[in-house]
Image (cartoon, rainbow, N blue to C red; front, side, top):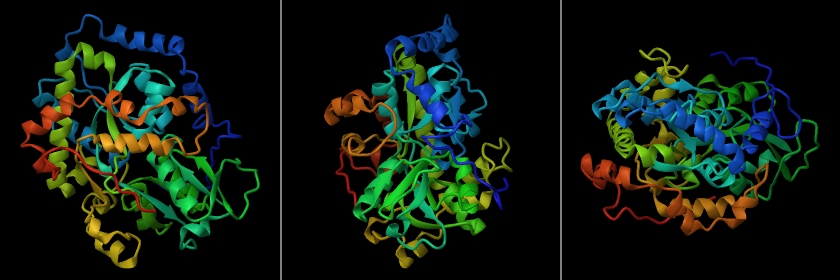
Length: 411
């Protein structure tokens, strides 16, 4: 994967015809009506017609980021098969818009998806799907050019996010607001004032090249792209996402309600395999990096073992604490960690935070969402609860026995 001296093509919400962000976003936004979403749902039903639940193959859709680790490790270690399921080779996508469209169309049936995007899919497009588990905690960062030393230095500049409905967009705008900066979406040609930061959407795989080519001043995204920018000398981490919102979810496992309702044993098997993959990864970080790498047997990602190990093994996190990049030393976090329980307190705070975050498109549905209702309605915790108990209970993941917590956000 070559990024050096690349000239970035930045897709914006205002003027881009490359088909990667605005066009995809508008096409997906067209699903925001039951009449349009229903035919795609029925196409998925047709594919599953007359097929027993345990004969439906696990079809994973993923982006080449460490957020996908549990799904890919479950496939690599044949954990789906251990649960009596068949699995196909996971399908790699370049952007979040593409993975959502494939999921809605029934081309894939198990995806990791940005937690805010699940709200958009379920309540914005009205596609019936639910979160069955978290994929991981933390695992993202704000990475900037070397001449940026603090958040306020981003004034008058452009920063890339992976999707409007992302924890990255939420946390970035919290950081900007705390430093007296306003988030705007002016496109490539619009003027940006000194107290503004222009946000553009880029697929994660394009962010490092855009930073190297000086088309953006920074990006906030999942690893290993932050680690890649560091190892290539292209940029530096300014703030870890988990150092802003303690142990936050980023990606979650998303299943259609059709599969949950008609194939509950299949949904349980999928969830159990993913939970077991998370537990294995916690104790085998370097081996996980090898399995996910471009030299692994399945070549799930184009990344090197060294870059992935920098994220999964996190041997240098103490250095970030010493330098002040990681400010909350008492949090005792890893760069990325894995636990599957979907805390209701997180979902409720997510709804509240998204309501005050600038996003593109029709956001009318957000004002109608009640945080407590969403925490009950969006999440189906039955399968993950059983899976956690099957592997030894909450304590094996360092979780409280009552599976409750309070959210901590420090900007």
